[in-house]
Amino acid sequence: MAFSGELKPAEILKALELLTAKKIAAEDLIFFDEIQDCAEAVTSLKYFAEELPRQAVIAAGSHLGLIKNEAAFPVGKVEFLSLHPLTFFEFLGNFEAETRAYFEGQALVSEAPFAEFYHQRALHWLRLYLCVGGMPGAVTAFVAMKGREPEAARAAREVQKGLIEGYYGDFAKHAGTVNANHILRVFQSCAVQLGRTQDESVSRFKFSGVIPRKKGFEAIDGPLTWLERSRLVIKTHLANRLEQPIRAFTQPNTFKVYLLDVGLLNAMLDVPTAGLLLGGLGTYSGYLAENFVAQELFARLDQSLCGWTESDSEVEFVISRDEGLCPVEVKASSRSRRAKSLDALIARYHPELAIKLTGQNRGRHAARGILTLPIYLAGRVAG
Image 1 (cartoon, rainbow, N blue to C red):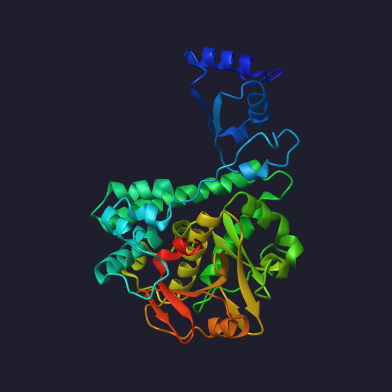
Image 2 (cartoon, rainbow, N blue to C red):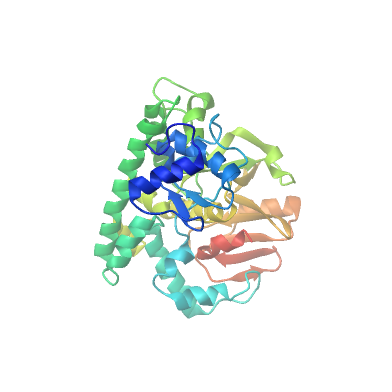
């Protein structure tokens, strides 16, 4: 085996040359895929960095966040890059590059509405994205059947189901000291709790009933942390003050949880693809919109998110921009609706910029100081 023995890079390269029957030159890129399955390969990265610093080495694999703290992990020797599901505009680039280019060329903060043609095209593709999501396999299946949307959506759903089953298998394979059945129950509960949303705002995560005969935050903390470090869920902490540093005003047991991909969320809940394509799912739209915004922000920020709650008011997200802390309210409807919680936040803290994401075109309410943006621009809100 290439990674047995003392893990000397020169010896590893010789073994790899024998196994592949190819000569490895100093300028070649070495790619170790699924590296989490070989602890010795992970450890060898340290020696490559120390003994062959000019040799380009890339390692990829699932659940790498779970092995960062192991004794054999080469701390300080590895640069981490995270892959996320395709964002909406990355998805859009497969179909209408011109529409994508139009929005990329527009300033975000402005009172002028976008050209209505492009706004409607973006809404059309957003509806498809909410069905397909951004997992590369699902997107590839959808693109392969371009022009036949119902069949393409069903093909993407089959890929999504396979991915979900693969995750379930990973729980048992990589759970370590965390109970794999508890991870499964928490993961499934994340989707179910999102699906129970009966209005436009997702409720904070509830602990009761998630794991049989166990109650409270402590019961789900380990499995949920496992899922978060595996990047399968996105946690949004709720701050009770809008001040920097905002994370200092959060509590470890008060948060919302979203899934890594809105397409996988629909697959886990068996939401019919036909209904998603038609956009007529009623109460589904609230949690879909919020999960979409969460994954767009997460892809940009690459860290857990924050929201705000105080008294009876709650705003879904708070991000840091050049203007300071910026509250972001999410409304799935394309109709103009009063953002009462956002109004309460503005009256109390007077932020330089407050954003409401909806299905509407861009506009600004001068008296209330709220910039309304189309929800498909959620990824750009983070700066």
